[in-house]
Length: 264
Length: 267
Image 1 (cartoon, rainbow over the protein chains, first blue to last red):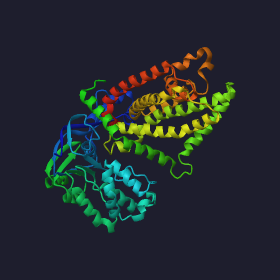
Image 2: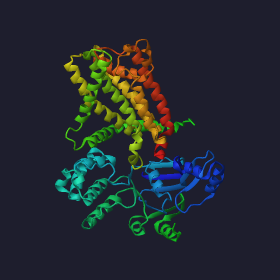
Image 3: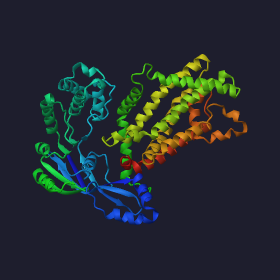
Image 4: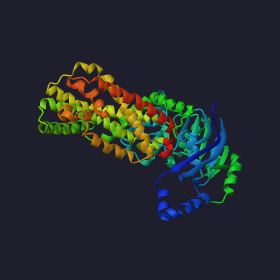
């Protein structure tokens, strides 16, 4: 049974460096309290709320009491302005950030696909990189072994697979990264913007592959600013603002709520 | 501050367990690190051996004259000492940079932290494998047979690995939060270098020989070096290293349990 459940999740980032120090610098010690008070009450257009705790520590409240329940078949679009908490929520769903408080339960193998080229070695051959990247994606040896032929035929790289990938053009590199990353579908797929492999001549095949890849996933969660793309892939929506969910439900409803919000 | 819940213990244990299950990825990444370092150079990883050999030769010969020791005895001593000292200190120093250098992986993938620790251990063992060749050559040329205590060498090696692993993990966690730690570690080691019997034999310190006994690295080094030189580590050496390994790991495990989930937040 695949599912992602969150109850009242909080994620806060402590800020240790320059910010507070430069505050002190600018205001002088006497004015610190005043400055901090101003900061406490300030409402910002972008980003999570910045708060100063009792100990004087600055924290950014990235997720502010988020609850959700995603089930098999859900294709969730995360909407919101820059810094509204989309990426933080994605990383929380992927199990990267453990919430400060609240409960998060994940059933199924969740794989975040943020940077398709993460872990690839420019001096390694295409083949070596299939293994490296496959391992990054948590694939087993058998899965990688079985995917090699499929990746080779999809990417049409031929003998280039035995060349160091620094000799590839950017398009070739992307084909390879995309080919490997979409070889095996995880239970739960987590995306920050839609993945793809540019190249005009290639786009139909890439889209077909992407369609198969995504359809097989139990749950997909994607953050994006592109309504047309979201309409194509998603059936549910969540609208975030300052780390809070301000609308959720069917995609169309959330999208219209999103489009009515004033631009930041 | 140091209240640790059972869940935190369970998650820290799970991290260590899953890290060991993923040991092959750790090994793959360790090789990858070394390959990337030496890719497209003609000598490749042999550079490790070459530069170490030259350094040891110069230091060994020079200090033999300086301390009036016979080269036959002194050079192998310096050589074995330096090879293992490099292993120990490099494991810890590179360990302190573990999470900082893996930061792009840490925020994009969910992997047990222990896997990155294993990567560090593997990489340094492979490097040691290259460097040890220098000693083998010196020992053959100068005819220095290992002592019978060589049988216990693997045990000493395992204990030392346990010690450097907790130190690396501890340093790695501190370093993500306080970025001055890696530099601090480096300067501490450059001081400890002189307080560890590497260039001189402890007995050359005369009545002050006890000074080096307070240095834990003296004992860690003895377990690895002495059997190769035909001697044997003392019981004190063994006991001290066992104590460092056990108590160090207990403390590190508590620390890891408490702050494991925070590591990603500190990046």
